[in-house]
Image (cartoon, rainbow, N blue to C red; front, side, top):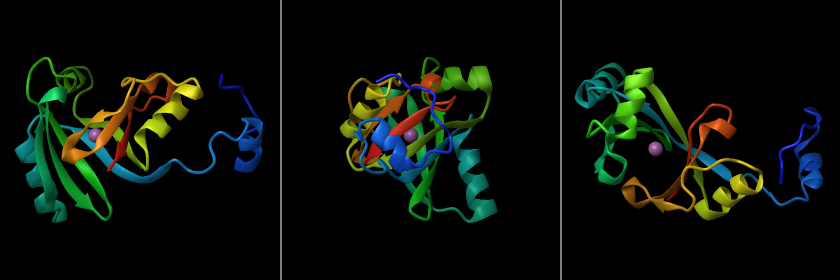
Length: 158
Ligand code: CO
């Protein structure tokens, strides 16, 4: 369904009625993590530990994405520090182009396939055409920033 301009003051119920109500409730249940691309993972972890007393919950090399990640617990969510493991990793190219900083935001969803389908149904451009394995045994899919107001979005099903 094409995205059409609508009254910005309409309520969510009015919007759902206009869309035929295919989205019946909030699909995003929590912020899973905010991912920050860094050059030096050790230095970034030290910064969060020493400055904020942050606790490392998980560390993993994700070969398929060409990254090493560290998850720092923040309540029910994480800060994810990301660094490339090779020069041709997408995160290496990101660091080259934009420098260090926020790389993507990950929303937790109950069902990655359902949320991804809703993106497609609403005319959104996706990076992953189908859900795939992420870190920590999760199932994930990335949505292209072009149709998501400039933000690379990851959907995470635990
Ligand atoms: Co992520």
